[in-house]
Structures are given as C-alpha cells and as structure tokens.
Image (cartoon, rainbow, N blue to C red; front, side, top):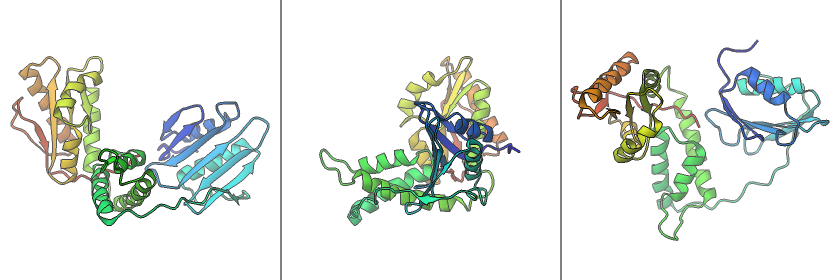
Length: 307
C-alpha cells in the first residue's frame, strides 16, 4: 500500500528528468519503463543529500536490471535482477529506508577507482573557507554543488586559487554531514518552514513571494517583476544578505511593494504579508508605513537542508 507522504528522495534519469519527492507509484513507473536508448538508467539520492549515499538502476531491453547502492565511500554493492517488479520494490524500500529492503539479492562489491589523494589545506585557508561555508549552511538554501563552488571560489584572487575543486568537495562534505547531524535535534515545524508556508499562502493570493532572492535590495527590486504571475498585484522577498542576517540571529528583513508603484498599494501588500506571517505563527515588527521594511523577529533560523 502506498504511503500518503512521498519518499524524501530525488531522482535523475538518463532522459534528463529530475523528480523531487516522487510518489512510490512514480518510482515504480520510472523503473519499469527503463530499457530504451536514452532512458536506460536512473539515480536516486536522499533529501537532504548524504555524501556517497545513493541507489541506481541500469537496464537495456533483453538484459537484467543492474541494481546498485552505495552506503559510504568504502561500501558500494550491486546485483543483477531479472524482474522489474523486484527492482522497483527494492528501490521503494531503499527510498523509505525500510529495514531489510535489500534482502533476497546476491550483492557483490562494485569496483570503483580508489579515492583521490586530496592534500590538506593550510590551516589559515581552511579556517577562512570553513567559516564561509558554515554561514551558507546555516542559511540553508545551497546544495552541495553550490557550496563546493562557493568554497573553491571564495579566496580566488587573479590567478591564485588556494582551494582546489577536490579540496572544496571534501571540506563541504564534512561540514554538510555535521549540519545534518545538528538538524536531527530540531523538533517539529521550524520558523523557516513557517515562513515558507506563509509565502505559499501569499503566492496563492496574488503576491509574488520569493525566499533568498537576488544578492541585494537593488537587484531584487529590479528583478522581482520577472517573477510575477498573471494576476499578481504585489511582491515580497528577502535577498541573500537578509538571509545571512537572519541565520546570524538578527531577525529577517522583508522587502515588499505593489506593482502599480502606489504607496497605498504597497502598504496594503505589507498588511497582507504581516497577516500571513502572523497566521503562520511568526511575529513581526512594522509601523504600517509603505516606506519601512517588515522585520520578522524573534526568529530561530533552523533551516533544514534540502539539496
């Protein structure tokens, strides 16, 4: 029987599709259709992603299904299975993290190249890059690939690149795992999740609502209209500098306005935003003036990783 809640996984196919939190039925369908050129494999990762942990399937018409899963950098196992249904059920079990999902198969180690030797970073470089990556992890919007790029590029000056791609990946993976361990202690709905819920409500009511949008106020205000859906009368957003401030414990600044440019419309949008946040269980500070930003405070910024 299929669970009402979709498995916390993401799927990529050779066909170029990307599915986030697909249903069990969709997972089974994706496995059963494998076989034709251009649609012979799929890879499944957890949400949030766990480094060196994934499951994958390869199949060509007339052959067995090659089912593989990796539990860590050291443990990578595979098996050949004739029946698509058995593979599909195993993949659903893996996605659900059901005990014994891998029983009944003959698993053998998958040969892979030995891990690359990665030189240690100088302490000063490592500490500076770690500090920046920790900030971005607390913000919670970047996936591992984005964080790795940020770590590699952070200290670049001209032709000087003190952090290699491999060093950046290793550093990010270590800090990513630490953050995953931290968030296991978070209970229930967090304030960033309440914020997302309020933004979804506003979006349904004709207010373009975007989280962590653009790098600054100037860029955000210039670019938000491109996000406008038909019928939207106003907008609200916060940019990446606002996110970093919230993650540092200083509350969250929200910028808003009306698309007609009128102060009355902007103030009305502000009231809509404050009402939606209040209904979601968040407190705000705002004097009702169209010229003043809205601050969400107090705010505990426990943003769960999703990448």
